[in-house]
Amino acid sequence: MLDLGGARDPEEEPFGPGFLTRFEERTEVDRLLQDLDPRDRQLLTLWYVEGHPVTTIARRLGISRVHCYRLRDRALRQMVEASSRNVG
Image 1 (tube, rainbow, N blue to C red):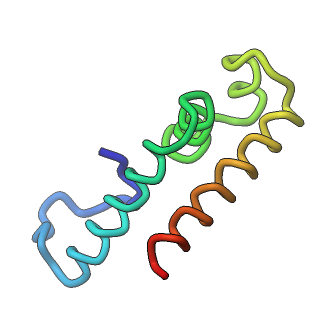
Image 2 (image 1 turned 60 degrees about the vertical axis):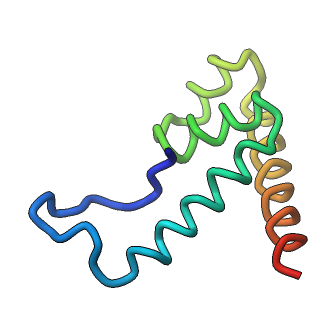
């Protein structure tokens, strides 16, 4: 599962305030990622989850840095649009 949260105290109660909201958000992001093209999903995972710089991502995917930005923007836009359709 996609972990978008920041660092957490391992001694902290895992089901504290906001747990369900964070869980629902992570579940929604994971669902939206699954709807993307595999390359777009990999790009976003490398970028936002693993934190690789764009030069590393471009080299790994065999594309230019500029194209990385284009793909990222398109993928994020698709996720926002899909999320909007599910709300309304």
